[in-house]
Image (cartoon, rainbow, N blue to C red; front, side, top):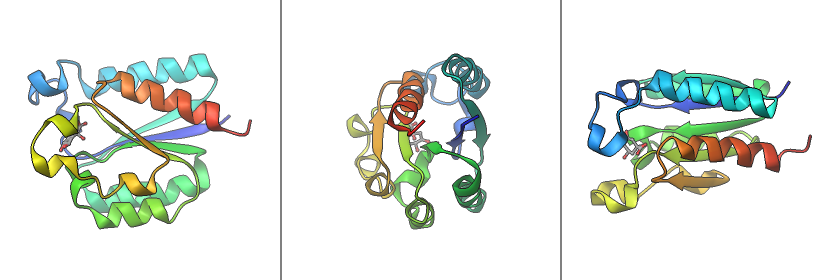
Length: 145
Ligand code: DQA
């Protein structure tokens, strides 16, 4: 069965507690539960991962090249400055979709730049948890199977 990696970056383990006016009241477990349910409906597996550490995220991106058919990634604040994560994404050939829960373009200027988006298939911003669902559908629709 196809496996899709869902990688959430720094501070996303604090969803539900963290700035609820921006990110909502639902937790990371709620997000992962919803994605597992959605994946089951669509006949795929999701491997949901979260880390606050850049190197660990890079290692998972490398691992996914062997084990997954696509990646959904929310790199959190790393989006705005991590050339390491950008280069890791550029080094693999499976499709990667970048998701942001909040509308980064309506927020502080430093959030308007994504160093990672140019090496992804596409980016979804500002749609809350629905963005992850749409990314999953897009990866499946875009697949060869
Ligand atoms: C975020 C937006 C980033 O700017 C921020 O640093 C995050 C979350 C989002 O999902 O809206 O941690 O990626």
